[in-house]
Amino acid sequence: MLRRLLIILKEAISLAVFYYFLGPGKDRDQKAGARLRLSCERLGATFIKLGQMLSMRPDFIPTAYCLELENLLDSAPYIATKKIKQTINKELGAPVDKLFKDFSNQPLAAASLSQVHLATLFSGEQVVVKVLRPGTRKLISQDIKCIRLIGKLFGRTIFKNKKNLLDLINTLESWLAKETDYKNEANNMAVMASELKDAKRIVVPKVYKNLSTKDVLVMEYVEGQSMLEIIRLKRSGEVPKFSFSFQELVERLIEEMGINSLSRPHFHADLHPANVLVGEDGTIFLLDFGLIQYFDKRVRKNTTLFMLGMTMSSPELIISASRKLATFSPEYDENKVYPLLSEACDAYKNSPASQMSNSQFLMKVFNIGMKNGITFPWNLILYTRSAMHLDGMVLNLCPDFVFSEYSRQKFLEMYGEMMIKDILSLPHIVEKAGDIIEELQRYGR
Image (cartoon, rainbow, N blue to C red):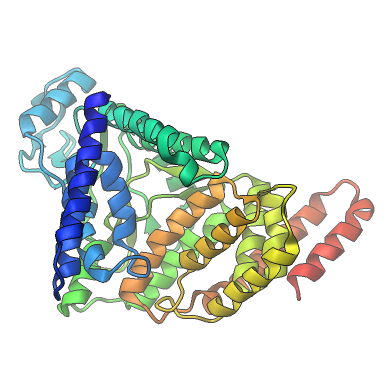
């Protein structure tokens, strides 16, 4: 662990020195972004994940940084195929040529946690074989220990509450544990395939559980271009003629994976553009289910109210939903919070993504809350993480898209349906009538 801590500190110091001596010029941001990407690659999976999240946020960091960090989404050093085959043999108890009719020695893709190869089953079905990078779990474990130590040394300068810091580290550890367990991912794929069976041309590839273990995942091969490739084509002005518009693609993703996800028990929490493939006919294929989040009925309802308040630019609804979702400290003062929320709502109201995106607004709300004694739950933070990735695609493909205008009525109808179901399921409707009427009045303003 000490060796890993020294490596992280050495890289951080090296990066700081590079920035300090970086001279002015038009390519300053490009050079800085390239150096930051290199640091993430050197430090491995945990830091690559952080870089991936930042890569799709041109509203948070300079575009030149985004372009460099974008390379972390679908590019990582290849592992020797010999090592990949050794892992498959160890995990599945048989050599590759006994398991597959054909296995490509050339990797189809390499990412921060895994490497993917194309193969053919003896039945003739084409599949992709996803293999966890050797040593990944050990590296992540060391990183978490280093982060905990750094947190103990410097955490008080960032976090007012020690519990918040511990929650952050524990959650990061939990996320990475889930993403490095492919048996967990295989189960997630089966769950999401069932829940998305009625979605508009949103498809989860078939998973072969009998060929999947903690370190190996075998699933159906699907053809298409990743959203990342499409974004790069649009940026270069070399977009091929599609049978669908970018607006249609964005609206379908937002409706099914952003809005309708609140009507289902689970949602995909890692929808970055390299995990979304688009077929020739516009069918959307979802990949990488290492991280899905469960929302119970109560949380779904209150998150819908929260999003309704956001799209209606209503501080009252946001505060009302927050009281049901978050924890409020005794120091909370609504007279301080309300004007700050009101200002943020006015700036967001009917704004295009390029001016203020959803997750940018959500982060403003979270920051206002944290500074005023409100602690939001991690499932809402995860929902925001998913929104960040969706926003990245919107910003790159349809920067003039206005989320609040598009989704306001949809959230209103969804919340109304949830309220009606609650009314019909209440054993004592008369006793609860006052509360129901008050809530209906609140969201109907």
